[in-house]
Amino acid sequence: MKHLFACLLVGCLAGPAWGEEFAVTFEEFLQKLEKAEPWTREKVEALLGVKLSERKPGGGRKSHRAYGQFVVAKDLIIREIALEIEGSTEETNILRLYLDNKSGCFTGDQIDKLYPGGYLGMKSPGAGSSDVKEMPWGELDFGFGPEKGFECLTDIGIRTNIFIKRYRD
Image 1 (cartoon, one colour):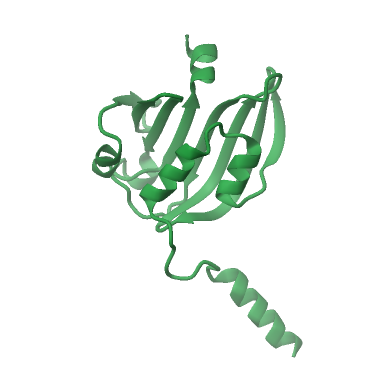
Image 2: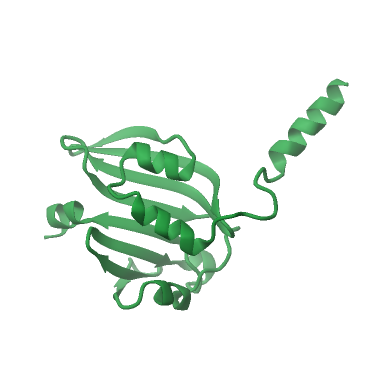
Protein backbone atom coordinates (compact mmCIF):
# COMPACT_ATOMS: atom_id res chain seq x y z
CA MET A 1 0.00 0.00 0.00
CA LYS A 2 2.86 2.36 0.83
CA HIS A 3 4.40 1.66 -2.56
CA LEU A 4 1.13 2.41 -4.34
CA PHE A 5 0.76 5.70 -2.48
CA ALA A 6 4.38 6.66 -3.27
CA CYS A 7 3.90 5.74 -6.92
CA LEU A 8 0.72 7.80 -7.17
CA LEU A 9 2.36 10.74 -5.40
CA VAL A 10 5.43 10.67 -7.65
CA GLY A 11 3.23 10.28 -10.72
CA CYS A 12 1.18 13.31 -9.72
CA LEU A 13 4.28 15.39 -9.08
CA ALA A 14 6.01 14.32 -12.27
CA GLY A 15 3.01 14.85 -14.53
CA PRO A 16 1.53 18.23 -15.32
CA ALA A 17 -1.23 19.22 -12.93
CA TRP A 18 -2.73 21.53 -15.54
CA GLY A 19 -3.72 18.80 -17.99
CA GLU A 20 -3.41 18.99 -21.74
CA GLU A 21 -5.68 21.99 -22.26
CA PHE A 22 -5.02 25.39 -20.71
CA ALA A 23 -7.81 27.95 -20.83
CA VAL A 24 -5.75 31.15 -21.20
CA THR A 25 -4.01 31.97 -24.49
CA PHE A 26 -0.71 33.83 -24.86
CA GLU A 27 -2.58 36.96 -25.95
CA GLU A 28 -4.98 36.77 -23.00
CA PHE A 29 -2.07 36.33 -20.60
CA LEU A 30 -0.39 39.47 -21.97
CA GLN A 31 -3.63 41.39 -21.49
CA LYS A 32 -3.89 40.20 -17.89
CA LEU A 33 -0.24 41.09 -17.33
CA GLU A 34 -0.84 44.64 -18.55
CA LYS A 35 -3.98 45.02 -16.44
CA ALA A 36 -2.00 44.11 -13.30
CA GLU A 37 -0.29 47.52 -13.47
CA PRO A 38 1.08 48.73 -11.08
CA TRP A 39 2.93 45.45 -10.62
CA THR A 40 3.13 45.06 -6.87
CA ARG A 41 4.46 41.90 -5.32
CA GLU A 42 0.94 40.89 -4.31
CA LYS A 43 -0.51 41.44 -7.81
CA VAL A 44 2.30 39.52 -9.49
CA GLU A 45 1.92 36.63 -7.05
CA ALA A 46 -1.85 36.52 -7.64
CA LEU A 47 -1.53 36.74 -11.43
CA LEU A 48 1.14 34.04 -11.68
CA GLY A 49 -0.09 31.88 -8.80
CA VAL A 50 3.29 31.76 -7.09
CA LYS A 51 4.94 33.05 -3.92
CA LEU A 52 7.98 35.26 -4.54
CA SER A 53 11.00 35.24 -2.24
CA GLU A 54 12.60 38.51 -1.21
CA ARG A 55 16.20 39.62 -1.49
CA LYS A 56 17.61 43.07 -0.82
CA PRO A 57 20.42 43.52 -3.36
CA GLY A 58 21.38 46.97 -2.11
CA GLY A 59 21.18 50.42 -3.56
CA GLY A 60 17.75 50.87 -1.98
CA ARG A 61 16.12 48.31 -4.27
CA LYS A 62 14.32 45.08 -3.38
CA SER A 63 14.30 41.98 -5.54
CA HIS A 64 11.56 39.36 -5.46
CA ARG A 65 12.11 36.08 -7.31
CA ALA A 66 10.68 32.65 -7.97
CA TYR A 67 12.14 29.69 -9.85
CA GLY A 68 10.38 26.60 -11.20
CA GLN A 69 8.03 25.75 -14.04
CA PHE A 70 4.98 27.98 -13.90
CA VAL A 71 2.39 27.35 -16.60
CA VAL A 72 0.59 30.65 -17.10
CA ALA A 73 -1.03 30.13 -20.51
CA LYS A 74 -1.29 27.59 -23.32
CA ASP A 75 2.30 26.77 -24.38
CA LEU A 76 3.68 29.46 -22.05
CA ILE A 77 5.82 28.15 -19.19
CA ILE A 78 7.87 30.52 -17.05
CA ARG A 79 11.06 29.25 -15.39
CA GLU A 80 12.03 32.42 -13.51
CA ILE A 81 10.17 35.48 -12.28
CA ALA A 82 12.12 38.58 -11.27
CA LEU A 83 10.41 41.62 -9.78
CA GLU A 84 12.43 44.63 -8.70
CA ILE A 85 10.92 47.45 -6.67
CA GLU A 86 12.30 50.66 -5.24
CA GLY A 87 12.91 50.03 -1.53
CA SER A 88 11.93 53.44 -0.18
CA THR A 89 8.82 54.04 -2.30
CA GLU A 90 7.72 50.44 -3.06
CA GLU A 91 7.27 51.47 -6.72
CA THR A 92 7.88 48.81 -9.34
CA ASN A 93 11.01 49.20 -11.48
CA ILE A 94 11.16 46.01 -13.53
CA LEU A 95 9.25 42.76 -13.93
CA ARG A 96 10.91 40.07 -16.05
CA LEU A 97 9.53 36.64 -16.91
CA TYR A 98 12.04 34.14 -18.32
CA LEU A 99 10.45 31.41 -20.41
CA ASP A 100 11.21 27.73 -20.00
CA ASN A 101 12.65 25.94 -23.03
CA LYS A 102 9.52 23.75 -23.02
CA SER A 103 7.39 26.78 -23.90
CA GLY A 104 5.98 27.04 -27.39
CA CYS A 105 7.57 29.25 -30.03
CA PHE A 106 6.16 32.77 -30.02
CA THR A 107 7.74 34.65 -32.93
CA GLY A 108 8.51 38.28 -33.58
CA ASP A 109 5.76 38.34 -36.20
CA GLN A 110 3.22 37.23 -33.58
CA ILE A 111 4.41 39.96 -31.21
CA ASP A 112 4.23 42.60 -33.97
CA LYS A 113 0.62 41.64 -34.71
CA LEU A 114 -0.29 42.06 -31.03
CA TYR A 115 1.85 45.17 -30.46
CA PRO A 116 2.62 46.93 -33.75
CA GLY A 117 5.44 49.47 -33.92
CA GLY A 118 8.16 49.76 -31.35
CA TYR A 119 11.86 49.45 -31.86
CA LEU A 120 14.63 46.86 -31.86
CA GLY A 121 16.61 46.73 -28.64
CA MET A 122 19.99 45.03 -28.60
CA LYS A 123 21.26 43.01 -25.68
CA SER A 124 24.93 42.25 -25.09
CA PRO A 125 26.75 40.46 -27.96
CA GLY A 126 25.49 36.91 -28.40
CA ALA A 127 22.59 37.47 -26.00
CA GLY A 128 20.01 38.33 -28.66
CA SER A 129 17.67 41.21 -29.26
CA SER A 130 14.43 42.67 -27.96
CA ASP A 131 11.28 43.91 -29.58
CA VAL A 132 10.47 46.90 -27.38
CA LYS A 133 7.00 48.45 -27.35
CA GLU A 134 6.48 51.82 -25.70
CA MET A 135 3.44 51.90 -23.46
CA PRO A 136 1.85 54.68 -21.36
CA TRP A 137 3.33 53.12 -18.19
CA GLY A 138 6.81 52.37 -19.63
CA GLU A 139 8.06 49.64 -21.96
CA LEU A 140 7.06 46.11 -22.80
CA ASP A 141 10.18 44.20 -23.84
CA PHE A 142 9.99 40.89 -25.71
CA GLY A 143 13.39 39.14 -25.72
CA PHE A 144 14.66 36.70 -28.34
CA GLY A 145 17.80 34.91 -27.19
CA PRO A 146 20.10 32.03 -28.06
CA GLU A 147 18.11 29.54 -25.97
CA LYS A 148 15.63 29.28 -28.86
CA GLY A 149 17.88 30.16 -31.78
CA PHE A 150 16.96 33.87 -31.67
CA GLU A 151 13.68 32.98 -33.45
CA CYS A 152 11.33 32.39 -30.50
CA LEU A 153 10.46 34.45 -27.45
CA THR A 154 12.74 33.75 -24.47
CA ASP A 155 11.62 36.42 -22.00
CA ILE A 156 9.01 39.11 -21.38
CA GLY A 157 9.98 42.27 -19.56
CA ILE A 158 8.26 45.32 -18.15
CA ARG A 159 10.23 48.49 -17.45
CA THR A 160 8.17 51.18 -15.76
CA ASN A 161 8.48 54.90 -16.41
CA ILE A 162 9.78 55.21 -12.85
CA PHE A 163 12.70 52.94 -13.70
CA ILE A 164 13.34 54.57 -17.09
CA LYS A 165 13.46 58.08 -15.60
CA ARG A 166 15.54 57.09 -12.62
CA TYR A 167 18.12 54.76 -14.18
CA ARG A 168 18.18 55.46 -17.90
CA ASP A 169 18.01 59.25 -18.16
